[in-house]
Amino acid sequence: MGAGAPYGAGGQVRDPGGLRASLAGLTTRGRSFLAAGTAAAGCAYVLGQGQLLRVGLLLVVLPLICVLTLHRTRHRVTADRRLTPPRVPAGGEARVQLRLENVSRIPTGLLMLQDRVPYVLGPRPRFVLDRVEAGGRREVSYRVRSDLRGRYPLGPLQLRLTDPFGLVELTRSFSAYDTLTVVPRTEPLPPVRMTGEANGYGEGTRRSLALAGDDDVIPRTYRRGDDLRRVHWRSTARYGELMVRREETPQRSKATVLLDTRGGAYEGAGPDSAFEWAVSAAASTVLHVLEQGFSVRLLTDTGDSVPGEGAGGFSSGGQESAEAAGLMMDTLAVVGHSQGSGLARACEAVRGAGAGLGSGGDGLLVAFFGDLDDVQTEMAARMRQRSAGAVAFVLDSATWAGEPSRVEERLRRLRDAGWTALAVPPGAAFADLWRQAGNAPVSTGTTPGGLV
Image 1 (cartoon, rainbow, N blue to C red):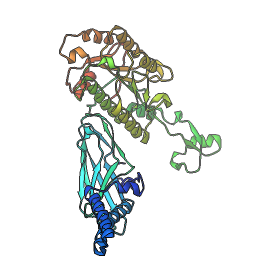
Image 2: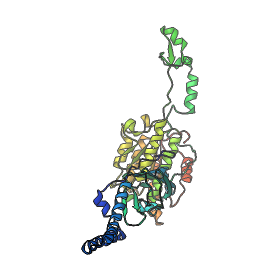
Image 3: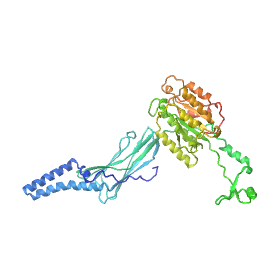
Image 4: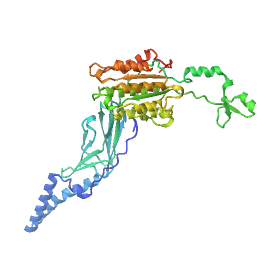
């Protein structure tokens, strides 16, 4: 449910049992009334005291009436939940609104609401409602916040009903729940010149089409509903029927964002760990290249791509790009360490003919690597061969631990293979590294590209 959406269907409370379960909700006071009433009725029968019998019956009937009333009332109380927004960045807040409605003809007694939330979102919210009149509504709200990305269930909502005398207390649960998605933090990236823009896309393409003139236009037969301003009169005279110009569709540049998720490639955990930095940077890159008009796919070391396998796994334009962005952000919200120890599958996905970066080695590859040994460095170097431009951000565990490392040797080998390779120091601002990558000298085998 997005912001401004109607309340979700909370439904009525579930009935875990019949009257027998409701009788189990008698409080100590209610059970004492029953015991005292039963004893008074027994004594009245033995002693022949009619007045005492009436008192005993009253003490017995009152708790039973309260049980029947609450048993019926909990069927006539409905609740809904509204989550705004359903997707927030790590550290952001979401608001949860609860609406309770009494659809019966009698008012309720004291009500206590408790919504179940994971401990990482904060303590369980509790609300006490004194009385809800017949047909009345009550709304309460609370906020949730998490510094850890992930998907967190909210609910089910628990409702505790009590009668005015405190004789019965029933706890019931609603069946509906919602899911809060906490996506990685992202930061805006500066537009810099990178390699990898496809030929035939952007401003240069429009100039080429304009210079080509009408002689290069491929017409087609007029169809009902076509704009008459697109009629190509020269072709119409040639073929003897109404012809219109085809709409030119520029080729979209492609970009692959590769995230190394190998468990052995990172050390440490928590919001400030190297792996969380890589996930956040990958999310920032995905959003940035989508905004620049690229077709994008998210790839991991397991070889799995997002948004899917269609069209090589790359996103499409228009509304589909927004949907692909949401899908990739949802994937990054829950991505964890893989069990793999190498980059072979990712290399196959990048170099494969069916999942390549485009014909003729066209496309941009942005990779976020953890620790690289000699074998994995060679594997990463081979990925560069099928892309027009490649940028690597290497997060070395020794560097993040403040210890001497061989990351410079790995970077040199990647640069020799044509990568623009940068080491990531602890706590570095990704926007600064992105700008540094754009200002770096063009690596061997690359050609200047467009604005990214």
